[in-house]
View (cartoon, rainbow, N blue to C red):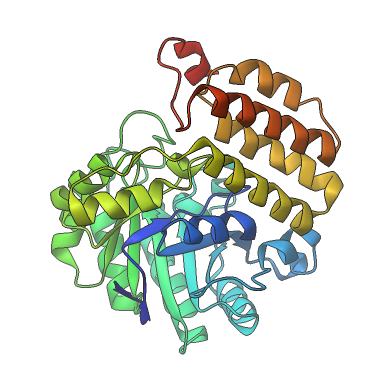
Length: 340
């Protein structure tokens, strides 16, 4: 796929997720079939550029190109400066966040709260595009502020006129947060109105759903977020299904152990052992959710503070699963495991 001046492996995108899409996770998803992965949201507040969190989020050493960095803020000048700052540090695509529904973001009129002020949206987009003329700028937003104000078509037209190279749209309003089901009619409408690429996002959790959304909306690609947590191989599953109409067999338990083992090592190296153990807990929880015996395993895991104990516990858990079944299978007899 050609996207924002780059040739991508496919049209499958990793959605930016705070606290999730760090460099280790982005690299893993790209390795397992994603065409592009967008970074965690980086603040536009220059006072925080030197903070450990911001510097780590802007760390792209060794990352597979293209490197897409998402910036967030509500001031056109600050957003322009943030775009320049990140472009100078290796960003090849600048993505503007107008999709985050979190209160701490929206309360300062950033994220999806910006959709209430279309004039401000235009000023921000124009400022960022002017600030980095040699870097592609993309935009992620929602269908609207609330269901009575689904103004995504207007925002999309503003984006195209401002020089934005592509848009990604989550099929919920800001008021919906992540509740209910995503709707795709608004995304289909936007696709019919603009000529730049449109990426559909929201509730895409299976190969069949990805195919349906692409066909229903006419979108140029799909963006996957929560469904990739603990299941980064979803990208190769979707890629294969879209190409052949057939499902890949479930991954071998031994392969998932290898994936998890390498992911944990990358997290420990990236964050340091003390913080790495804590960050790893949520990923281990996602890897094991829905597997036999995983609820008790996760409770024990959350008490571990040592990387060696954590790693050994993972080895033993997947080792027991491998003895029962060579391929990964989820526990359908005990639905509480899936809900835990």
